[in-house]
Length: 437
Image (cartoon, rainbow, N blue to C red; front, side, top):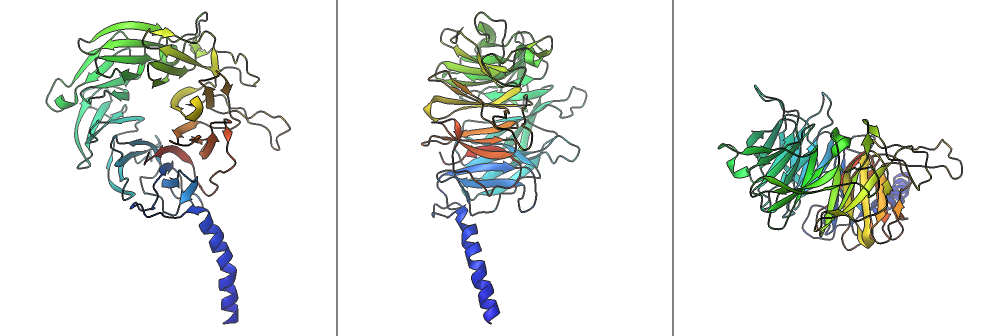
């Protein structure tokens, strides 16, 4: 009996330490009991970590006392519905073993309520404004008698496929404010597919408009009369990165502005963020099929860099007069945090990894850049890896970033990792989204 008692008491401190690493429920009605949640996807199972969607207390920066939500073998990209009731998760790694699972999570119960299997990998899906339907671009989906590529439609009320429209190599999607139009952008194409959701399955659901330059995204005016189309240009095999006005009422092209710093021949843009009438456009300039922007003003071992261009859409003109140099790579993540800090993420950038053990002053460089919209300063945090998820935390001066498979918490007042990090997240973390604010 004495030996058993000693054992129990010896385990007690360890149990208390373990529990202190997690956030306690607060009785909000969710499974975790948290009121300010962030979901983080982990796409591997290793050791004591399991693939799934992990829950984090975004008010306290601690992992919730709840099991990961199952969402396929390798969950990654997430999208939150406009009404914030559901989170959509894609699981797929592009290999022959990829499950290509598209899961729907009920945010209230913190459980997957259904899933479908897609005919290939997706990097883009959008949700109707009323949160009733999801549209998913699958560029490699086989189509009988036609080139691969479809946009699948899923009812979020029933969790089942309700239709599809053939769009060869459809890769990226943008949906307007009313949900009456979806613009689909295909690889190696200078056309935009204009999809009318109400016509899918009936006929005449898609028309094509040419005259663009490797378009990849669009932003819409408040009345949906105009789309501002982001042309990727040379980085995507075209000519010149730019922003092109597209009149949606008659299908004609309007004003155009090249995404180039005045006085230079360097133009780039693969991802953008719109803040009022100001667009921040990030990309890597290319010339002759190779990156061409020098890392001017930065002390780095990297040979080439990327550019951030600021465009005033009201005048269709470039605001910045000098190059804003950021990391290179293919930029596909961007978000504006507190204190005017713009976080820009890329993949396949130039990595600078110090030797082990690192000598004093050794450079570490990855795919994340932080631009201060108030001062114009650029910070490249000393962290390796692709930046795959960026989520500012509302009401706080922090931004969650998934980079190189880890979740980092940045203080926007210093542009550095804050002292408190979440240490008990084990796995390869891909995306992060806040659920409650």
